[in-house]
Length: 136
Image 1: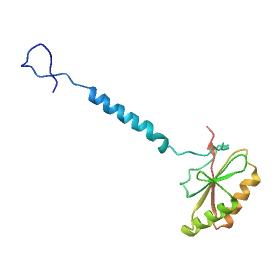
Image 2: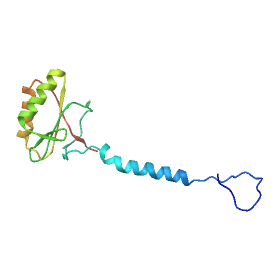
Image 3: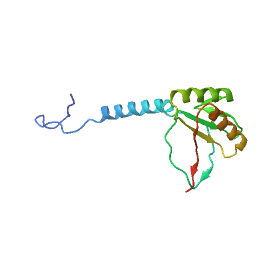
Image 4: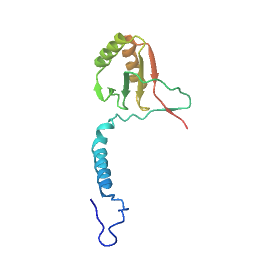
């Protein structure tokens, strides 16, 4: 219990001790600083093309990212064409109306994008969306 030195002993202590509050806030800050890198998911940098028209799409289990050098990723995993086909076939078997979302870098060769779409379409998925950045 805190006590005042000097003065009347009959008066109650009206000062608030904020040291424990500051200690708790510092601990919470440290917890956030440590846990933030685990919360933020690492992603693959894809420079999307810009377009004035576009619609929002719902998130999909089958999201393929294609980098400027033509490498394909599902999630954060670099995948081969065979792995894309296998994953698309599995998703089509689970949910026949699955939509594939393709995020291709604006410098990716058109032929590579068509090749990935063909792999997914041959696996049984017929609905596609291509990710863009909206022009302002």
